[in-house]
Image (cartoon, rainbow, N blue to C red; front, side, top):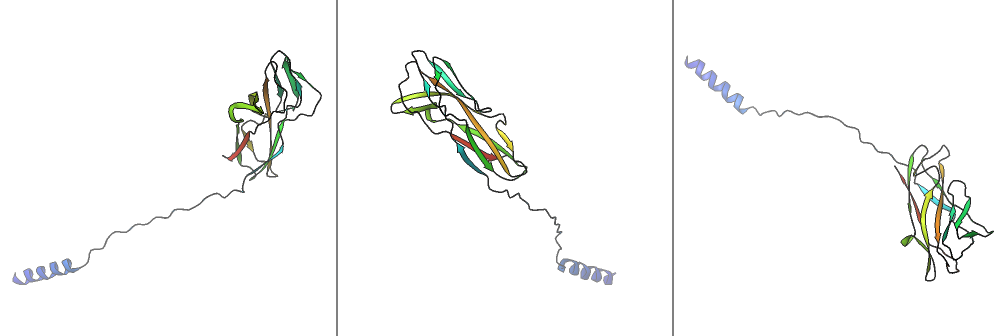
Length: 169
């Protein structure tokens, strides 16, 4: 029996002296990302409502974003002149969607000295606020607007900057 106790004591010492083995597990994951061609946006033409004649009755002049057609209403008469919808051309990664946003001029007005013309609205063409970039990597955006001409609006060349922003979606 004494031999059994000694053997048991030796076995217990060997077990206690053996280092513990920690359990280890591992897993793998993929690291990835998408790199897109840089997005560019260039102004091709300004939004220009042309020359109009005011009167003692307020009115407006509109340049359609889709057709580029100009119209005048109220006491405003569209004089023969050059006018245009704004045009922007962009380049980017084929097949990607681009979101568009318009920032109107400060105060929503065009300025000539101390006089102003109201920017009633700015609008994007029928493509709306998104574009899917075509096979050639390019896209075009047209911008139109509606401008309020006050009764007895002072003569002047009215202008202000607006911003079109394009971002990958």
